Structure formats: structure tokens, C-alpha cells
Image (cartoon, rainbow, N blue to C red):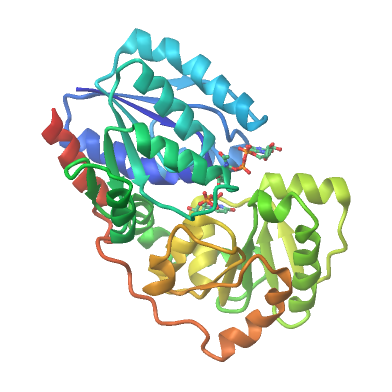
Length: 359
Ligand code: UD1
Ligand code: UDP
């Protein structure tokens, strides 16, 4: 069997690493090709994940870089098509909901090549999110749909996906975390930033709805206030950094803005944090598994299982509510974590088994 994996962004690498490993083990005779679209390209947004997760070097680099949605989508399609026509894989695997995901799926499907979509069926019901459009379109054209939660399976059923096409397998992002648990738990990466375990609020913010407009500066003002009581560590996504650099923002002494950190270091920072403020999809899931209080600065989540079974509290897209976080933590504003069903580190093995059964 010839399998092509197409990936392009930080969360893609985390989701795909364990599946690539599981397929190598389950189908040792298979021919696996890794294509990196280059949507993320800074070392700390890309190469560090290959190194820390033990993913082999990509066979092909498409180097699409940054650009508008149309530019990124079109560049992936133009540069992937000749590889697909040359290699004719039996299956193309795409993860998540980024521009690279949908572009690769559309290119393969138009050539009659089956597509497997990892992390299928998530819905925020908010079509102003670019990811929501990518998810709906990828699910509509993919042949094999692998889902992380029962809700996601229900979403696909309601959209008319035939039984047998969608499989509830668990969460490969959690597989990556579980595989590295012995390494990140003792790391205490917070000490690199002169912080104590349990003594800081960890922050990531990168969604366009927040960082591309004035709300980003309201969030920084609120974090400045929180930082007077609790140290705040904020590894800044390059989209967010570009805005902060362009506009300038006053930063209080307790608010530490740093570059993105490696995956092992970030997991360590997550597990030792007092709480996390984020608008990331993956971090809502990781904190649920780790049992760390998570406050999500969005109006909606495509991952409701993290609210129902986990530690996730939705703050709304309202930076003023950031000031409530210290009080919410001490008031026990979050519930005890319980990992959702099948978030057990074995999702990739289940997917590999299903892919092998299609052979
Ligand atoms: C993308 C995904 C988003 C995902 C996020 C994960 C889409 C539509 N969005 O958003 O769903 O949550 O990745 O982090 O696919 N940049 C750099 N260096 C890099 C990468 C980006 O400096 O290595 C800067 C550039 O200024 C670029 C901006 O970040 O314009 C945004 O990058 P882009 O890949 O377009 O979107 P993300 O915001 O990263
Ligand atoms: N992450 C990381 N370093 C950082 C910030 C995040 O390694 O400085 C990891 C995090 O542990 C998770 C993934 O990146 O596995 C989440 O990526 P991101 O928030 O960019 O994307 P999203 O999940 O929102 O699509």
C-alpha cells in the first residue's frame, strides 16, 4: 500500500506523528511518503516538532509559506498535483482543519485518489472561522473519516454521512502527549522563565477573530492587570507577534511575552500551570487530558467534550473576562478532568488497523 501524508502546520505535526509511526508498524511493507506544505516554516513552528516527535524528514517540501487563504490553498494544489500524479498513492491522509488540509484533500479527490481525514466531524457552527469552512469541505469529499468524539460522529451522521464511512477512534493529539508523558512531566520548563510549578498563568492566543483586530489590545490590557497578582507566561504565535510588533503594546513587568516554545517544553508548561488562557483548539484538548483548568477566549468551541467532561470554561470572545480568571481558579470554577472516551493514547493504532483492513 502506498500512503501519502500531507501536513503543514504546528498542530498537524502533533496529530500526524503517532499515526505515521503506527502505520509503519502495522503495515511494514507499505510505502509512506511525507509531504510538508510549508504553511508553517519557522523552526519553532515546524522542525522542532519533527525532532521531538521522531517524525522522519519530509520527502517533499512544497514551501507554500504565508499568504491569503486563496494563495495558500492554490499553492498547495498546484505543487501537490504533480506529486500525486507521479506517485499515484493508494491513500492520502490529511489532519485537522487548516488551509493545507482542505487543499490537499481537494487535489487528491479530483485525481480519484481516496482521502482519509483525521479529526473529522468537529463543528463550531461558526462559518466566519476559516477552520470551520475547511472542516466542512474536507469532510464532504473525504472517503475515510476518523473522529475524536461521539459528538463529532453525531455531527457527521446528521450531515448524512453513510454508516461505515466515519469511525470513532479517539484522539491522535492525545496519543502524542501520552507517548511523551515520561519526558515532559519531570521537565519543569517553567524554571527556564524563572517561574515555579503551579505559580503562573499560561497564555496562547492566535485566532484571527481575536488577534487581527482591537480585541488583542484589550486582552493585553487585561493580562497586564492579572500579571500584577499572578505571573503570566505568553509564548506568542507569529500571527499575534506580527500584530503586536506592528501596533506596539504596553507590557507590564509580570507579563512575559516569549517566542513559541518546543512541544515538550509546552506540554511541561501546560501540566505545571495554575491555569491556561487560550483560543487554541488543541490546547483545549490537552488541558482536558492533563486536568489543568483551561479558559477559552472564544464564543464557541468545536470541542464541546472538553467543556462537558474536562476542565474547559468558555469565557466568550470578551477580553474583559480575563480579569476573572484568578478568582475563578480559587473559587474552584472548573470541574475535575476526566479524559473523554478513547482518549487513551491508542487512537493511531485503531486508525492503522482500519486503514490496513481497507488494503
Ligand atoms: C493556521 C491555521 C489555524 C491553526 C494555526 C495553528 C488556517 C486557515 N489557519 O493559522 O487553523 O489554528 O495555523 O497554529 O489554515 N507565520 C510566521 N511563521 C510561520 C508561520 C506563520 O511568521 O512559521 C506568520 C505569518 O505572518 C503568517 C501568519 O503567521 O501570515 C499566519 O500564518 P497562517 O499559517 O496563515 O495562519 P495561522 O494563524 O498560523
Ligand atoms: N504548542 C507548542 N508550543 C507553543 C504553543 C503550542 O508546542 O508555544 C503546541 C500545543 O502543545 C499543541 C499545539 O501546539 O499541541 C497547538 O497548536 P495551535 O494552538 O497553534 O493550533 P490549534 O490547535 O489551535 O489549531
